[in-house]
View 1 (cartoon, rainbow, N blue to C red):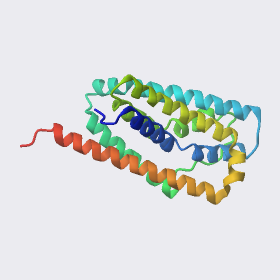
View 2 (view 1 turned 90 degrees about the vertical axis):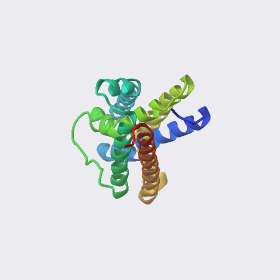
View 3 (view 1 turned 90 degrees about the horizontal axis):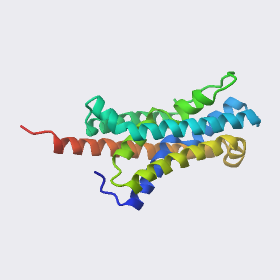
View 4 (view 1 turned 135 degrees about the horizontal axis):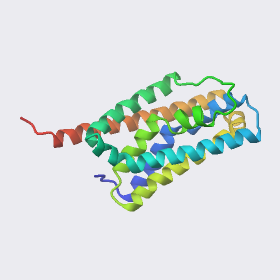
Length: 206
């Protein structure tokens, strides 16, 4: 059960989802894939990716609890595993080892734009964990708001990538990406700590 009041939960949910989704990084990769060109087909790919990303993330948010029941998973175990995964994602982001090279495929709206960029394992894990912490309908709604804000941000980032890079410059983009990576790392550590505390209170001692 979450101890956060609705406004605090809303801020946590939206900022966490945007941070792990990392629209800036997606925009950078999109710019590479499109070679900086602006065409209608690329806008359609970005829109398709955003729609699919929302559907995938919303579906996992809703079915997360059911998955726990089917596979007999404890929330704290999934939370610890998710936190460890997010730590790996954050460290890869910081070391810039998760880049995706350019591709000549006609349509890259599903791979890599939707998966793993918009709705990757880290983002899926995040929405499941955050949704499981919602204590009322309003908090649950904020999870979907966070998903919507994230995919919309990614869409506009992709369709305006050439402008973003002219504004920030290469060094500016690296700084923003590093800051997002640190935020993701902090979120991941918080997940692990919360899972360990939950496990300590639920597992019988002695």
